Image 1 (cartoon, helix red, strand yellow):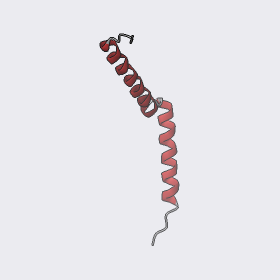
Image 2 (cartoon, one colour):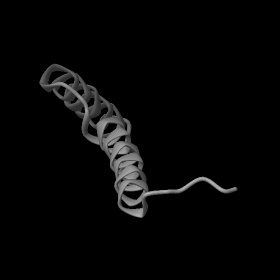
Image 3 (tube, rainbow, N blue to C red):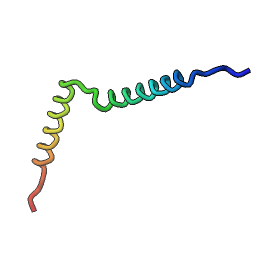
Image 4 (cartoon, rainbow, N blue to C red):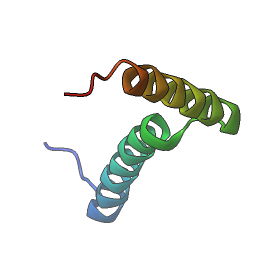
Length: 58
């Protein structure tokens, strides 16, 4: 005989797995601390200054 499956519980379990996957993706995308964001911003500014300083005028 086959096993009886509660469809409501199966639906909720599948939704929970999808929510965990979405949460993991969001943590990777938005999960930087304020300090990390500040360091990244300073590095980008330094890179832009370096590139702008190296431009030649035609």
